Image 1 (tube, helix red, strand yellow):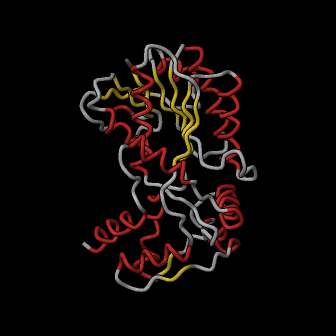
Image 2: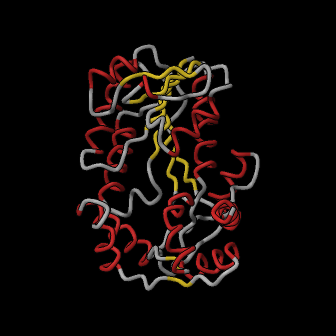
Length: 291
């Protein structure tokens, strides 16, 4: 039983590694710099990156189960499709692929469309994969510390339709459970799709209220101005990414991304507990900032 985790030093991948480290399975962690990596005991760092087919062939040799996460970069689709093809060639019996919620409908958002194209490849070749579609991460809002604690502002233009955000810890735990299930199975398991969302439909106003409570000081909602949002993002990100994120938040504003009761219940059953609530995440973050 050998599991390869890509994105092993990122938010989701690092949490998956923690869950898998004591599982008894042989864990390989893909990283550009194995000599610099610090993983739990029993985890083997493996050199490679998704855009290097030769390195991925070597990393996938002898692997039974793959966790596949590709970064939001211009060649994301090439990286995903090539890696799925290499995994198929290597005889990998189980794949857990991290897609995104609304991948099939937010067609004007490039990384959503890239992930949906990968889902289509998985379907066409009937790859033995679990497709996980997580919603917007709670932890993305940690970068708002300055605006929240300084200006008393929740600036992300999330809109008023509602987005059922999710905690990275819940995503990682769900992925680890599925990786182990597929790794321990006698043979390939059927292809499935699993929506991962939290229990609350969060709007800009609701988020400002939550942070007001968590910080013990007034926090107001931003004005949802997408042009201003894109301009501000371009001061710290490339233009293509700033526009892409503008498009993503436009869809959140227009359509929302609210989970169904059935989707939340399915995740609750998988985890054996209720998914974490944003209110608890905000309280913990505020305590760490103030302490």
